[in-house]
Length: 431
Image: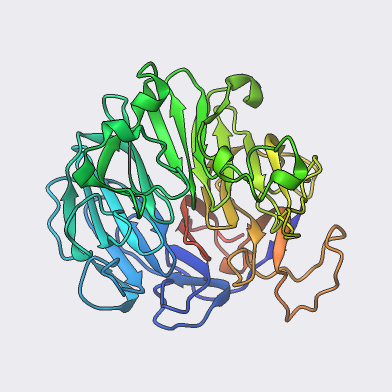
């Protein structure tokens, strides 16, 4: 718990970025990791932010801008770029959502149409007979309200409340009924689904879905009745009856969803659910945040309360994790706790905006995506010098941008797998 200062001296700009930058995904014109915030300016307000393994997307709702690695067309154009540039495609309506997988991108427009571009090696574009695409291609699916790109798969919820998925299914992250899939749409040997496939049959067609999120190899979806279903690779979300069966019994943990009722979240409405590679965050209607899943890099932002380090039959050690959703606390130095209005996940780190529109960070920090902490808190055992980067942060920290000498409000946040992005509006008064 606490605060730390970050230093950068340019003002009057709007996008703050930090973390991994080996492919120019921060859009700052170089390829050096940023351990302290870098800033770039956009003339129009930014509403949507997302990042992948080595690329980034931002949108002002009229256009989508991209930068970073473009090895398979994930930028939506023909060349790499370490500055944000507009994707040269005329979308028919405004952009409602963008989401990045490892090396592909998806977008939902205001009319519910879905577009995808980048790698299609695992069917993640929702199209057949193409290896990749440098231009956005329309996905054949009914109008969509929510979408999320995982490492190599996509889940989406339609306006009519149906749950769809496509892409890699090697860890059963799509959890569909194989009998419902046409043979030409599914490669059994590769376990790839090349077109959007209805997942409702697995749940008996009785649920109306309203939201969804994708992790590396798992998916989670919310029903109209405020319940969550998590499916796919559940190694970090479900305890095994026998400790030594953990590693050898993976397949048995991939066949059925794990359900979470509202009671788990103090009977409050679930307003947002997001996934890291192997952890989940839920934000409720009262501004509380719950986390569960893998925790060895501080992903959960809290103390893990269960015995969770197992040794499998092959003597491999599994990382710490907590299968039970637990509350994450956001304490100021005054001791007061703030509520949260938005959360975002990278691969193993997370961001949050509090009710005062300030930024909080925690989790994996190897590339500086959580910022440089100069004062070492007592709960971090090893002593680090000011020049060294703390490898991970176990509890939320509020970033204090006092060096800007202006009032500021964090409006939108987004994560790449190893970098962080925030849209910030500056005021005119000096702090």
